[in-house]
Amino acid sequence: MSLRTRIRDGDKAAFGELFDECSKAVYNHAFRLTANWSTAEDVMALTFLEAWRLKGRIDPEGGSLRPWLLGIATNVARNVRRAARRHDDALARLPRGEEVPDFADEVVGRIDDAERLAGVRRAYGRLRRQEQDVFALCVWAGLDYAQAAEALGIPVGTVRSRLSRARKKLAAEGEPPPPARQVVGDPGPEKEEINELAD
Image (cartoon, rainbow, N blue to C red; front, side, top):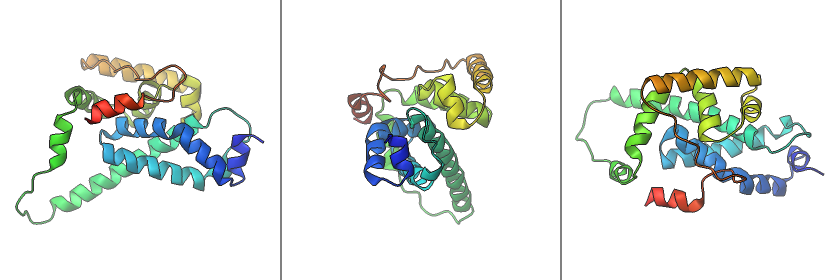
């Protein structure tokens, strides 16, 4: 029985295998979308909760479930950002108190490529939402056109055209898209690379 079928049937051990296989890729994708380690952890957890809830929709035929999970993570990250904006807007309406320094800024300042990531994220933020989704999946998460199309539920040709438009816009702003930090056959960056960025 395939992993897809076992998960669809509610096999928790099979879902654990899926988590072991894809959690690093989902986490890395979430970090690239949110630029925040803590938020990326939340997105990863919510992604797997949502995947378990949607397990009955899994097609028993097919390959890796990684594209499906990254599609869910893309939507979860968007919802988390929307909720954060609403929260920030609500806080902005409250009376101002004495500001407390945020130690997270100090940690972010120690990440070597924080400035570049910020610049890329600013340019990324000016893309249309559909272009952001395709760019994040193809460039940052390393999915091919067919996998991104599967993750987003759109035709492959649409993925190609949206990615082409996104690349042109980023190039026009002087922000070349960063290469996906992936090793062939590996769903995401090596653990050591993540640890280096966190140190």
